[in-house]
Image 1 (cartoon, rainbow, N blue to C red):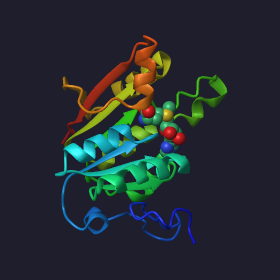
Image 2: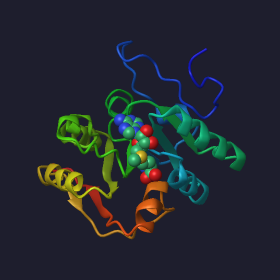
Image 3: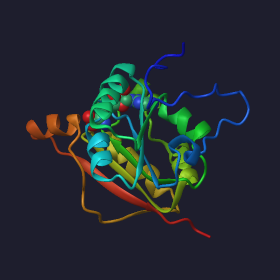
Image 4: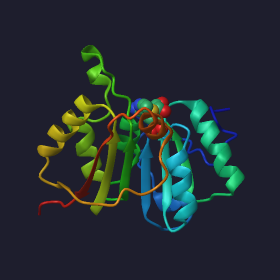
Length: 203
Ligand SMILES: C[S@@+](CC[C@H](N)C(=O)[O-])C[C@H]1O[C@@H](n2cnc3c(N)ncnc32)[C@H](O)[C@@H]1O
């Protein structure tokens, strides 16, 4: 039995290399609604709150750690949510191989692992290649929501974003539940760096 096969909201993914693995969101959710993706959901606080409040949106939560997928899945089941799906995968691989182009209305990336040691920087999620995949998969007008407590990583994100001709910073009211990490950092007075970008492709 594949890992997590008992979890009905968990997407079972084909093996990369087995031909075209691109998903069809209408098939995944059973109907057509805008899709928003959160990467690194942790305990799922943001995702679940958003799914409860916005039943006109389909939410996909990507998380590497199975214990968090199980925790957030149980919370969704208790609330009877049908507009959420979980993916247990490396987000970079999932976005590159499974997400169709021009199919995502928003990405939410809150407190991605900062990998502070220089020799580990290559493990960071946010880099030029990842941003290219975000641009490939966002619909025009789609948004990228970013937050981190880690100033040096934020500077890298801003530098990468500055190279893009299609992502422009927008003023947007910060919405939704605070994530677990956000609460933890706010409690100790750490600064939080945020940015909201809109995808405006150059013709
Ligand atoms: C620092 S925690 C933040 C969790 C949550 N966003 C919050 O703010 O409370 C980072 C989360 O991202 C997950 N993660 C890190 N790298 C990932 C990757 N490449 N793909 C999927 N999940 C990842 C980790 O397992 C962890 O749960």
